[in-house]
Length: 324
Ligand code: BMA
Image (cartoon, rainbow, N blue to C red):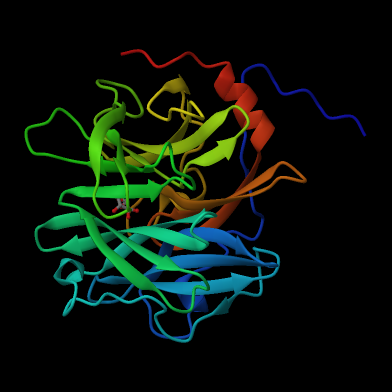
């Protein structure tokens, strides 16, 4: 079979949506849930594990584990919240926990989960660890409000762990992506701006944030990030790419000028928050080069898209180094 060439007037599409999308909604939940979305993802043995953000009718979120052999169907969902806010001990979780990103850290032998603790003073970054997605223990809050969209790198640089996050301060001219370092995962410093939100008409003007954790590739650390465009009709959350130097992730080698994935289908365009695609996890199968991206659609469902890692890298390497 010969593939038809792409018409010259169409953008190249890197992502293929799963025909079964949305793969999870609140209707699939074994207990009352208002909405399920923005799931962290990893491969644990022969199962795909999603750590799904579940919002209840108070508006507060907790995290629940869903497991599947094929990563698409037959999900086994924990019958109750797997990792629930504990506001009596961790007051920063008073209004729930959201948007987990999970990173396997081989030298520690555990998964580090970076999540948003929604405190009355604003969103903060908290870390927790697990080895089995059955029991979880907290490392505690690591960044003061307002800060979110965080993930740790799977390995240290020198002797230091590294974490990407997105602080916001009043009076600043935008919300940018930052990189910080820590000797112990608890104390963080040596803060650097990594990617600036662009300005004006750009799709990623004013507010950007990391989506899934950084992915190590032979060409560098691959970042998928969201850009938020404010329009008269509301916000649009779209996705772009950046590549960081493998040994010194403070160096941004390439950044896409164009978004590469955006809300298009009804489950992305209409929901609690219209016009949102929000991935918190991706899983690479190195044997097939297929990257599975799990994303929230319109803050109302979990959806899946696949892409070829080498296609993404080839495209990104054709993009310029970021302009100051
Ligand atoms: C961001 C986060 C996400 C959410 C998105 C769209 O600020 O809070 O959890 O999916 O907004 O509402």
